[in-house]
Image 1: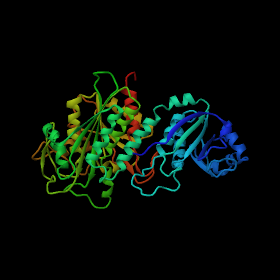
Image 2: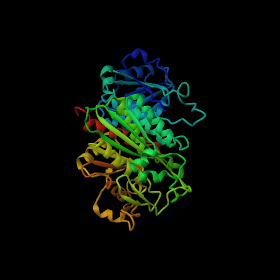
Image 3: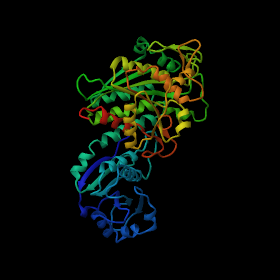
Image 4: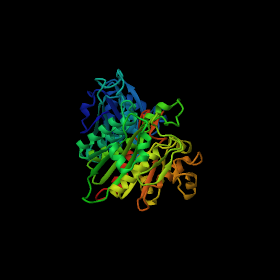
Amino acid sequence: MTETPSLAFTEIDLDSIASAEGRVAVFISPSGKLDQTARRVNRLTRGALERFAESKAFAKLREGEARDLAWPTGLAAEALQVVKLDRRPDGEEARKAGIAIGRAARGKSVLVLAGNIRGIEDLALGALLRAYDFTDHRSKKDDDAGDDGASPGSLTFMCSKPEEAEAAAADVPALAQGVFFTRDLVNAPSNVLTTTAFADTLKALSKLGAKVTVLEEDKLEKLGMRALLGVGQGSESPSKVVVIEWNGGGKGERPFALVGKGVVFDTGGISLKPAGGMEDMTMDMGGAGVVAGVMKALALRKAKANVVGLVGLVENMPDGRAQRPGDVVTSMKGDTIEVINTDAEGRLVLCDVIWYAQETYDPVGMVDLATLTGAIIIGLGHENAGVFSNDDNLCEAFLAAARAEGEGAWRMPLGDGYDKQLKSRIADMKNVGGRPAGSITAAQFLKRFVKDETPWIHLDIAGVASLKTEGPHAPKGATGWGVLALNRLIADRFETGS
């Protein structure tokens, strides 16, 4: 798995700046004011920093943006990165500045001259998140990468109060590792991340103190999860449900549940997708990837909460045994479903796992995540995930967490009127309701498997799980969207003492 750069905090030592190797990052306020570390850099570079602060290039930079001065005179470093940032930035600006540092790091050692800047934890998180680079399947490493071409590098923050900064950033490495875990899973090709390999990867979370249980097909059959099993019956890869329990809260306290769609590859089944773009369906397990990342972050930071993560792992393939359009399957709940379109398979996976989560754990609340519909991309693009909920309080708490973490989320409607589209002539319901309001009818389908007393959120992350362009704090590819917001939701609402 991709490693995060090492993170350290050290006291201000002006004499050590000149000999620092790798990269040096220095901050200048929008007014052009230099702090003591910047003044030392300016003296070492014979006034280059001050000249840049007075230039049009610096004036054009937005707050949080940066510019490199290559091979600066007077420094051993190969590059001096000048970051435009106020000494008291808000969290968004600080994280943006950190992202600029992480983007340029490329596996090298970076000395960040933070001085007395506030919000170093946001700087550090931004830098760690943007330092991600998925290289598992490259035979040749980038020549511009770190010293050995494979090291994740290091970030050292030279600041006025290193002990306070380290305490404030105590959870940052855990959050970054959780996001990296999600990104690695979502970026992995499907011939590598099979259902079995996915389950084996999740088993490793037991080393962090989580309890991991894998439910195999025979167990799923006994439980009556025939909606889920129907999706995977055309694949050579066995269907599985993996349950990850983190019991960091009070003994006997009901857990909060996270449920993820884990379709490791989606051809559409007999309702075959067009060939163009089908390679992107390696990311159709994005919901399960987010659940895995959150659970890893919670375990690493020893969260004082009881949380259970459940992921349904299947592969949707066309085969002589594959599910057909027109088939009728019976869910664990007992409802019958007419399968109109085998490419609407995610909801068939989720409905059984959602029901199992409630029957087994009686959760205090539940969030499911899925790359569920193309319709949500038509509605919201790649800026926001679709948020559907039966509970205003839980929904508002999540939306607040998402805003705080800069992860776009937009609440979408639910309503009984949409249920009409799901009526079936021969079964209790159809698995699709036609083109109109496709993401809403998908959520209405899932809502039928949520008990009235269970506060619930459905997150359709089809537009945000993986991007063709650089994201806010990620390179092209998997974003890790949702790990930070869900971690914050759990910390704010469900941890002991919160």
